Image (cartoon, rainbow over all chains, first blue to last red; front, side):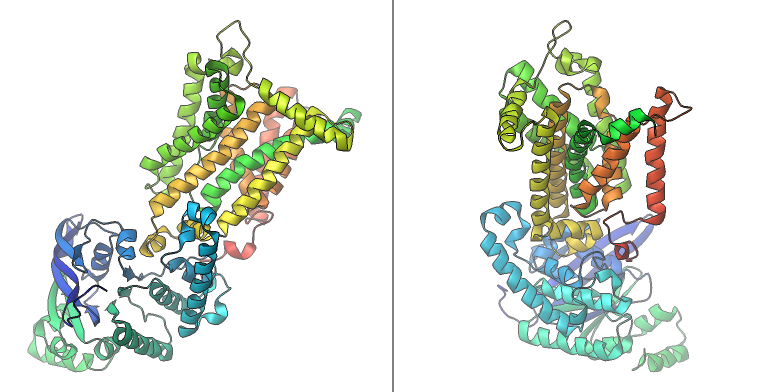
Length: 277
Length: 327
């Protein structure tokens, strides 16, 4: 990926990013970074700014202030497609399955470097277009098998259940040969056994292909088992950042979730968040 | 049925005329199918592309003295340029705003044609292109081409009328265009267009430049509208701004919805049904109504058919019902 290969290298670097909606600061100088080839969880109570951060980083919202670097280059203010082309791909909290297209087509769309997406190449280099289509289709089926959607490949994506759509989005994101994938609640509605397989697959991709994952997740069990690092947001700011164990014991995190300072309650919450959903 | 009506509906000339009109509207509505059916763009000013092309060609032939084929190509190019021009500021808008902007664009073109008499011949139409007192004509070259085709057809089929020749030419073009569109829609390029129709955020999150593709869809749709405009001009030899009122755009919408959104072969089906109703009611002698009322009755009838269709077959005649219920 053109990197020097250091394990602690930042693939994504977000500095003091600000985004308001009306008078509300959805992101209030949010600052965080994500290391290459890591699985990082982004957590926080509802309204903490997690999804807004995703939107800003992937170009769907323009930040009012701050800097965002991906692979060392500024991406803030760039349009979403340009950021995706650099290898930073996301999924959506409310899934965006392309309903009146087949599951397979959803996958094939995501493949990069398809010359046939340009009109002149369709006419001038039809063989290259067909060759790429065959490659892409093969890869699409393999990924669909991974998420156990291969039997539904010819069906309309609009017929999939909520959980299946999450899986399709996950597979579709991988289809685009990304360097980093940002997953917005990837496990919501997914059957737990399959969810575990996906988590294993994420770890495998991280190890083998040095893929980076940043995921918003509410399932604490998932967060604590899969991620080596947890970033906690509240009211548009990053309030804690560390290993799952460090974060779990951080009083600011517990306060953010409950808005209380009482010591006993804090202890009770620490106990409650340990290993439960 | 009165005897006169019966004669009309059994007359070859009548059906030939219906076929020609249906063919022109097929090409016209194919442009909308590309923009709306495949890309999801709400274009309510499609008629403008027809108008721009027809006027560009007529003006180039009559006033500049260009040959017909060069003028026709320039006319298509001009319509595509207008497609991009209207797209640049509006395509980023939400769908409903795009609809408003395009309907305004369509009216602007018509009003320019109506008022810039020196350029367009004004309300009297293209017959006035050389100024009052001299009848201007732009289709001499087309007629001679049509006669060449007619002679060729007559070698094989005996007596062939002018309209029948036109019918053959137009439907040949229709079939070629549909084959081209089928290829495009099922290509990776068309896949991107359809993804924009489904969810443009998903499309751009996967690295597709939605803006650029929308402009391409607008330009391609404009080119198809332009081809329809040229055939319209040739068929009727003369036209005026009132031929390009907003109703014409809605005829294309009726055809696309009647046939089935997102399906190329549905367009000629929709256009033929529309053509039969449109031309058929023109000649139908309906009791208790005078001729002027009948013109309105025709529109009421088309509206009723559309309402009935929406109620009982919302996916259109060739559409797939399951696509209507997908979330």
